[in-house]
Image (cartoon, rainbow, N blue to C red; front, side, top):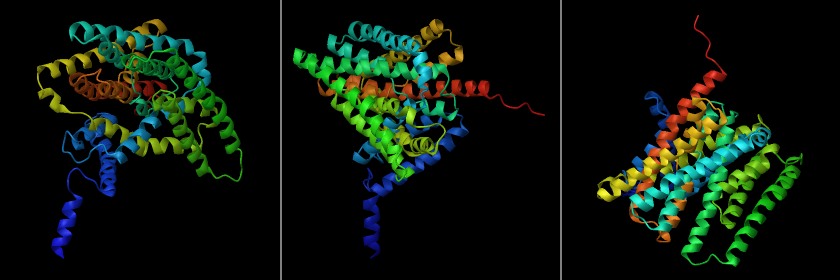
Length: 409
């Protein structure tokens, strides 16, 4: 009897873990303990989640692999980041400052490509399509550090609105470029290709901006429908929009953000519905996504030869330099403060979901080689850490400026 119990226990603890209850328990322990440990050494929670993912992932202790359950929660977390960013966006202020978002969007798109293409084509010696795809990857960024902005309640700062607006502009453009590059690789840049792309994008925007808000308004005005159903409806709308974006050839993160814009005026702030959306994201789903980002980091690339190391370092430096230059020029053109520049850099310098999606698609299409794939994974880890630290510092300073600490008596 004891032998059977012992064998059963060993089977449950066999690595990587496969028991869903044990997997979820481990993730919850990390979500619980990482912020406590990071607070002791004054490092943002986000960094702790990413590092924890690296430790428990397949290239660390191999406690977890990116199985279907992890992928599901990570996808929800990523969509949540984009959705919350869109919900918290002050649309009236955004419309008033839209030209500033266009300026930042243009800079954060073009400067990284101007830096990245010569690096890949001339210095690293990659072919044209590979260099174009890798350079476009530098232009993307994921709002990994946005929860820090929410934590310090500085999301209404103009620099945040401009950065969020620029994020969507540049990521959408890059993902359309990705579709074009893949089409060129497959010899498919025909009139039918362009017609299908334009039609699918048009249908997507019409459904999200015209149909979903009307249905939501009708649903929210039904007195017999309870508040829990309102929350479920919001999640359904977010995922449905993400799926439509995928069908249109865009990344699901674009769909989640566009859904947030479409529903923005219907979700009052503050309200119980808004609080529930934020709570679920910050407590479970977003940390899950950050842990999953860490799980793809493979430090073995540093020992895979000098070529892999050179590519990894080059890509990381170019990515951070491009985003810093974009934030610097945005500051000078729009007259922002140094803290706002640091906030823009922090929010826009982290590469994660869109970057990984672009590189993986390029790798499967044999446009990207192993060195760029591995180098990008290192880039993701480093940029997420740098972005989190920069945003934490800037967000804290802005919060103190907005709400000064009382003087000691």
